[in-house]
Length: 349
Image (cartoon, rainbow, N blue to C red):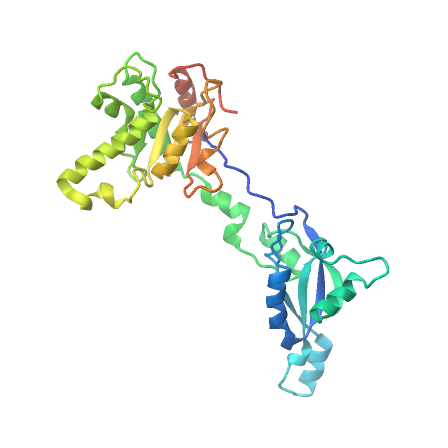
């Protein structure tokens, strides 16, 4: 079986997204009847005082107003051949989640009920509780189910199934990743007998190797392991990109293709390395604006994994994120990376 058909690369998932406040399928809310002429003003007021997006619960996927057609009234209007049908439309408004409203309106045992307080405060009628969809619909069937209770927004392109489909790697991408990792392994052997991890930078569209750590190391006449903590293969590869940009600019100026890609060194490029990047290497790749980082194996207990453990590629608050993959331990690529690693490594879990 070929490497691509057995899916030799496993994605390092980033930090889990925060929950929407409730993982329950349905939550309880307060609704009420509202006059059409008061509806717009009340919606604005509720947006300030009882926003649907709260720290404890997110109901922003629900419509604030529900237009309910009174079938009996509509039939009577149609029979009388009157043109105005607004009398057959009843407006219901979603006030907020029961849990949120109970925190906002404290009721004494002998005082008015919550419903009475809401009616007095917001000038509405027939306040009651209702179960509605408690989360963003994850499928069209779930959206239809939620709509039976209360109008709900649905964005197919934001569903988990759609996002997973969008993130799937094509056969061509897998083939390019296998080839890129082989180039990274070649970069290891280019160092000679010294076990130094390989690192290369690749154009994703063509698979062309743009820069290698070996080339930069030789240029700096540093065949031996450099004691400088910044002299790592990944940093050397990034420096090699910078060097080639400068050389290209000498002959072609700012119009050269290297500069056309953007202001950052590795915008949209892929990095292949036989050993997982450390934390500071992973952050350097964030600053370089890479697209993918593919590594062969973990560094074991010798250092903290910048991607597998800290997940620097998906840190909240950063202004760039990239996708990270590692070679499956069962593949030849994964085994070769572990064999050529400078220290004892452990397979990725």
